[in-house]
Amino acid sequence: MRNSFFFKQIDNSALIVFRMMFGLLLFLEAVGAIFTGWVRLAMIEPTFTFSFIGFEWLQPLPGLGMYFYYLLMGVFGFMVMIGYRYRLSMVMFTLMWTVVYLMQKSFYNNHYYFLILLCGIMIFLPANRAYSLDAKRKPEIRSESMPAWCKWIVVLQVWIVYTFASVAKLYPDWLDGTVAAEFMLRREDYPIIGAWLQQTWVHYVIIYFGILYDLLVVPLLLYKRTRLWAFFLSIFFHIFNSIVFQIGIFPYLSLAFTLFFFEPKTIAGIFLKSKKVYSENIQKIPQHAGIIKFLFISYLCVQLLLPLRHWAIPGDVLWTEEGHRMSWRMMLRTKKGFIKYKVVNKETGEINFINPVDSLTAKQMAALPNKPDFIWQYAQRLKKQYQEKALDVAVYAIGKVSVNNRSFTPLIDPEVDLAAEDWSAWCHHPWILPKPVDKE
Image 1 (tube, rainbow, N blue to C red):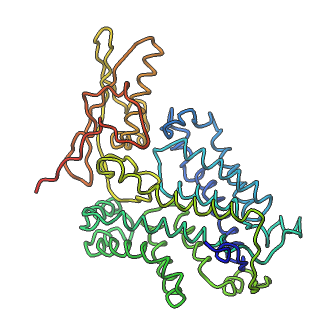
Image 2 (image 1 turned 180 degrees about the vertical axis):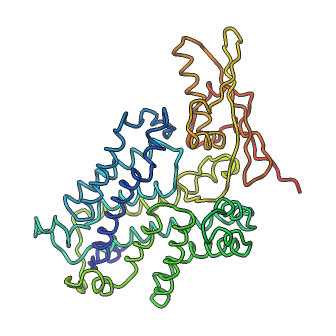
Image 3 (image 1 turned 45 degrees about the horizontal axis):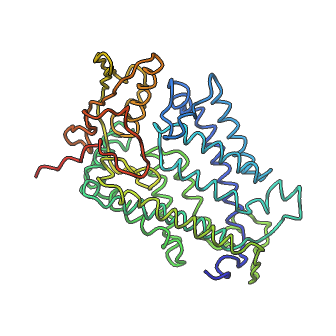
């Protein structure tokens, strides 16, 4: 790519305003997790958390530790908003958020992963060069401009998320309304809109408007003639999602992204009335321009390839879950199931049946039967507990799963000793049984 694409200087109004909104949302996300009870449910109540495999050593702080942890994250979010020690604050929030993301999967959400990526990007953007305490403390860093790549890394990341989210919905159970009907049934008791959400025509509007919106919103925002219409559609789309699906800060973060599509004069006129709009047409080629271009392109390549990895793994990802996370496969299916474990003493042949409900929270128990990595991790946990008693055991999982309200079917081979199995993030595990064939 040419240097003119990367290093042409453009006005930084969008980035400056976005930093303020982003910092505010980080603050609200961290503090809100405390006051809504999320920290208690996800971090305090469980006796242990299902961490990402390989990070089992990451467990919540004891006592009130996680409340202080989230309060500190809120402080760093506020510091990002006001632009105080911006780089340090952004690094610290990113690290702390990544830790809690890796620490528990029971409340997994693609939006939490997206926040890691966005925080990582923001570390490297000069978002504190104006309207910040850093710029007040150090006037020499003040600037009305930024390199063009700072805009395009955000725009392209957003485009990747929306595009993969749209394409992932192109499968029968989504297109025929099965999934939407199931999601809306869970919201039947919503005041005013609950009954309305049960209408079949509403389901089809949600289905196809969602697909088209995700696929087209970024191109429509880039095109000047359709930009304003796309913005109004975005307001409707994200406010609807916020009310109906209650997905935290993500709808408002998505609206904040639209700043990068509008003219600097418009943004400055609304939010930064005293700011001079940068209009010079120059390039500033930094000393390490080649490294910046390499990292920019490499990062985008990873983001394009990672969501495709499930195609290299045998089996239907909607069934096996292998390659599901970090792939923008958002709200695509419903899953429910039940499970118990058979523990066999290899020396004596004694058999014990373990019901996980005795040691898990309701949220953990809802996830365990449906997700092979959870099932494997719990088997490994049982193996370790028996090893501490100097007992060598085999552990078998016995259960069934229903996808999109179909009949319950075994997900895990009950004849395989999961305690003796290894886990790989990139390969299919043969103890995951094949997806059942639908009867015509």
